[in-house]
Amino acid sequence: MKKLLVATAVGAVIVGLGTLPTAVEAAKYRAKVGGGPTGGTFNTFANAMAVYIPKAEKNIKMSAVGSGGSVENVKRVSKGESQFGLCYAVDAALGWKGKLPKDGKKYDGLRAMGFLYGAPVQLVVRADSPLQSAKDLVGKRVAVGNAGSGAAASAERFFRHIDVWDVFKPTFLGYSAAASAFKDGKIDAFWVLVGYPNRSIIEASVQVDIRLIDVGKEAEQSGFFDKFSYLPTIIPAGTYGKNSPECSTYQDATILSCHEDVPEDIVYRIMNALWSPEGMAAMVAAKKTFKSMTVDNAFLGASVQLHPGAVKFWTEQGQAIPENLGPQ
Image (cartoon, rainbow, N blue to C red; front, side, top):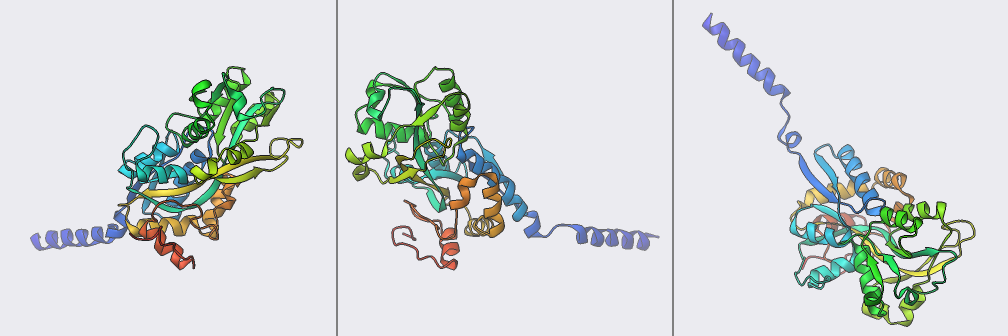
């Protein structure tokens, strides 16, 4: 009887072991991806990525976390508070050098993965507003983005450069909140640094006729491009209504970034999933802005060192790694 009980117990253990997950199956990598404020493209991408990656990579669990935006993501990802995050190239470069606004700390734990999309400045006013240039904003109420966001940081850089920052009234509001305040007449203009067409600008344009102020020529004529590595660009005609004219502006590169200690294999697998035809289709389905997230664009605009997993991925895609972005 004792032998029978022992045999039964051993058999049960063997059967049980047969149903246990393997070490690889049991080991799930959990990560946070920092997005941005409600209504922004950062937030849309982070949410889409957090949904798609666990479907493509069963052993990777991912959650999107709220964030003020680019500058906050540079800091959080560099410190490992978020393993991944969306960051603007200019903010990342300044963070590495310890030159972020009012913060001399070096955030050099950040690593670049790949280019997602260009984020142009869009400065919105009412169509019947007398405001014709950024310098006309003296004494006006302007929403510049959430505190800690790339939008707010870029606004301060530009408006300080043209000597307007200290003589107007910056209001720190996220895009959706800014659009609402704009419609209600509580602010005179609002600034976004995001792919177009932007949902918040569209929301504002439904109730109020809008137009964009040309900041591209002002940036060029003032020497702004000599000081910061933004790129001139154009918002096409018809972007915000069939009668809206094209608008000269400038843009930053949005880079998917990660902490330096994320395992190489994890970064490589995530990139294989995101930059696959299926992954890119899923991102474009979330927002058409992400159609520029292509293999050909690779790490366009990246300003800090690539993660080793990204180096491996892009090398396999036939992309030459610039010396300043490779291992150092």
